[in-house]
Image 1 (cartoon, helix red, strand yellow):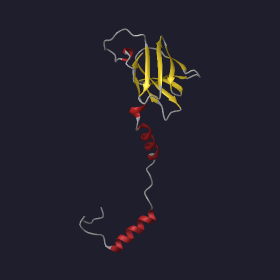
Image 2 (image 1 turned 120 degrees about the horizontal axis):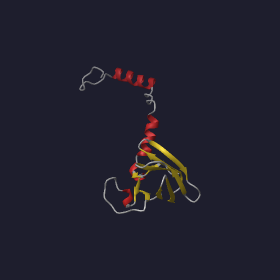
Image 3 (image 1 turned 135 degrees about the horizontal axis):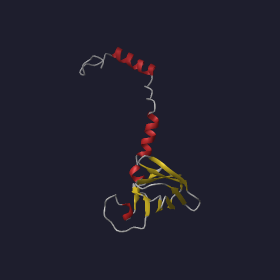
Image 4 (image 1 turned 60 degrees about the vertical axis):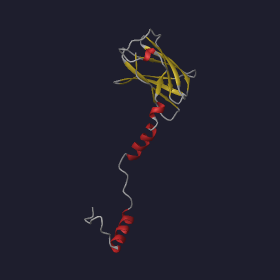
Length: 155
């Protein structure tokens, strides 16, 4: 970079000048937005541990898979066991109850974005209105470190 070969040493007077220049200029400033990106990465670091898992229910099987008749009831639990909820799909709406965890809001997301949001009452109940069928997932928001998203399921 400085035009010298790797095997050449920097003379002492040049080294002192470079050292003084480095102290005078100070460290390079952080690029804009870097701290925000680092904070987001720290939150997402344990994403796999926070993603809710389906609890062995045939209703949550991927589309096109054969399975038995189901009652439309889904159960979700976070990998670390800190959040659990049960959801029943009714015509045009999802009704659910938080079994474990301190959630304040539940949002229904479709591939195009969030389509419904509902508050969780004091008993842990929530209801979300929706239209149509297709893939969806729930985003769970509470007093935990960050939002948790369930796996995708079919409505």
